[in-house]
Length: 232
Image (cartoon, rainbow, N blue to C red; front, top):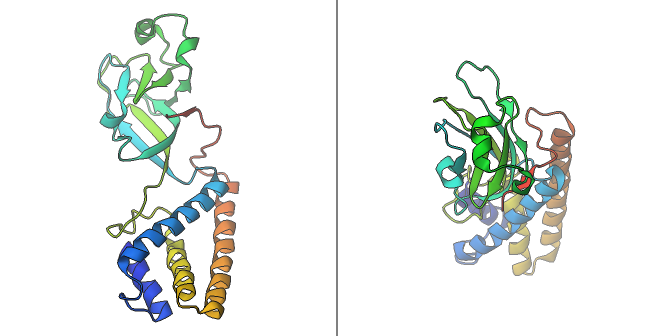
């Protein structure tokens, strides 16, 4: 559901018109309720639900890769963690090699040394400012050499938000309008109706928690545990 559909559903369920509960009112309330649902999912999945993947080609002899150049502009995406990094140094390699995280202060030599001399079977990375540094540097042009997984905080939603912009599972989008329904009833002084709507909302929250826990208690393809490093 997109923003408009969620808003219209709340109006329809409460027999309310747009003059009594304006889109401006809904805009503020909806994002508050959405962020509460995001927090609920975070508490279940430890951020693992909200991840993204980026893949980029090599830049020969380049170790520094700027976040913005990877499509990770901090102004566009609130990145909580760079979680896992993988590389392959040749087009002939079938599988990616995991890149281990180190702290810059742990290096015993200048970073330029590791550009050439670090083993390709044991690559490492560290983060400074908005860049990720990977050693050794690639020596050939390799398509999709860097595979990067990050965990982010979903952006706020507003009247232009599409269904894809609302990052909680699609089947739970209706929970946002269900909560708006409670707010509308309370604003009208309809406490019994508000309580009934609250009970329904609580039931669906329990369903959401059960479904999310089931997903994250199982082995999944990309299991983001033991986060390596804070991005900022």
